[in-house]
Image (cartoon, rainbow, N blue to C red; front, top):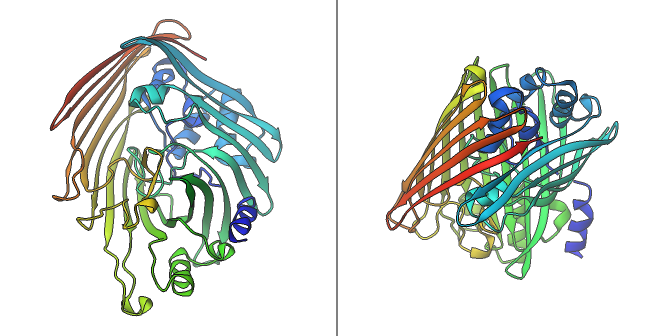
Length: 443
């Protein structure tokens, strides 16, 4: 009965890309933003864009692509549009392989869109066979009650260019349902964007439930702030109330009512983000609270939960010709026996398939991420990416190391290109080098 209620309500509720977010790696927006010249090569380098930058880029695109990009970003505040873009290339490592990415939007009516993205390049780059070919297959509906999205898509809420701490595209895309609505809370509190998503899937032979919600406000042209909470659980008692109550309260009310105060069935997380923009610069910070300890009186003084946290701080500078440089530091810390994104009940770890649902820094690590994107001529593009990780504490034991990735691509004609992707990874026990020579076509 409770599961049935959850499934019935989930058909009413998806998550939305909004101004101020950073697009997912495979998002159609990244493909449609590729303009003439060296910038056409950007999707080959796993580049992600801030949505405010994409709105500016849309004004410089051909009419069809510009309209499609605005439709993806603004929904029915932009005109209906249809456009598809992508790339395909052949490469040789151990064997000859063909990979690519294609994405776009088809407006079904003034108030409905179908958005899709198909990708095999990322699984090749990252050597992750569990990544599906169909990254996005989503219906978007625009109604007087708000914006609804139904289908499969990656989740990435704010954060930095290396990923977001609460919900990021590190994990494979989730089939989910979500909702967004602008709430005007009066003259003093202003207008906030409310967003909620929900999904259920099988893991380890049993059902798992994931829900998240976020409130976000642009305080000015420069400042924005957001507050979010989420959970992953193995049960959903009184499932309808989870859509109404704060998740933290829902956890403790249900634990006391059904499970004698024990909360191993429910993994709660909260998140705070702040972003500041000044011209071509952005400074941003995010704090994740995982397994927050409840006041002892709320658990009748019987149970305690270790505090696990994560922090991301970043800086981004826009360079000429849509180049950019960014520097980010991420840190996760927590109880030695568990750690951020893990949980005392392993079945409810903040993971999906082969990766965490949050930032790729993972559990118990410090991470430095630096990336430079720069056109080196009108027809050539260079990207240099450096990542280094170390353990934040002695336990739990996690892999650490350094990694360099370099992309160099050259347009050979109007739509053909050649390029190379170099990757060198160095850890305590291993060192690997990969060269991917690419010949391909943009469309």
